[in-house]
Image (cartoon, rainbow, N blue to C red):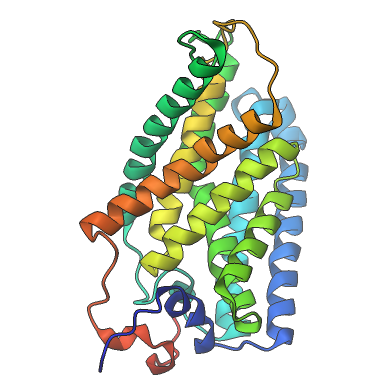
Amino acid sequence: MKQKNNFPRAFIDLAQIGRTNWQSVALTFLLVKFLTILFSLSSVIAVHSSIFSEHGLFNISEADRTIVFKVVEAVACIFGLWLACKKIQQRPFRSLISIDMTFDIRRCLLGATLYLTANAVSFMAISLFSSMRAGAWVFPFRHVEWPHQNEQIVASMGELIIIPFLAFSEELFFRAWLTQTLGRYIRSTITVVVLVAVLFAVAHSQYDLRVKTLVMLSSLGFSALSLRDQRLELAIGAHAMLNVCATLQLLFFTGPSPHVQIPATTLDWCTLAVLKGILPFALIYGVLQKTRGWFVPANARLESPGNIQPRHL
């Protein structure tokens, strides 16, 4: 059989393995949201109970409670999707991850390494642009300064530990289930990717419009990696490393600004958005394209989801 080259559809059409009617889609969404609310309420009640609030051994600080709540939400999302695949959609859970129904941790590490390198290049590009605007060499962030509060260090270390898990749950929901689901009703891959990016940005309600723009651009990059690679691990690794870099920046780059503030114009914000939100993913995509580092199915038959027989894990 001749191997097809329609990479995006190979991953999106994995939804064909299970049920794709609107009832199963609605039930899956409701199940995930119900479990998220249930788990979150249970965790709130637990950490505020007398066992945790009065006993010194189990006492959880406010910063640590935030970490606990994030982990609980991620667990609820992953468990909800697993349960939905098994009981509602009747498809393998790993069909949300890759076209060959496997999970490769090495590709997660590859995605993280590539993003870290590309982000360094993006950092230098931002520095160069800022320097051109200021007329002198400018460091785009504040001075490096060691955190003054141990609680801040502990909270950040906790964040760093759970970041890969949180990235996995978000990629599983947005770049996998939501993308594959919308792809069954919208045949234009670009439209699906843009719609997922908008919903991804809206879901991050804690950010303002400018940060939401960067989140949306990053979502487009995650989708480009997952659809071209026909699996989710590269996007998971890149997503995790992006959050790691952001956490470390907030932890250590807290000193005074090293340069005179220059009023930012609309052109400045657009340029910085491109350098921060698009350039890293363009570099990753280009490197993988140049080195032929994309995933290649061992069996060309896997390129046609219609040939994959449904099975339970």
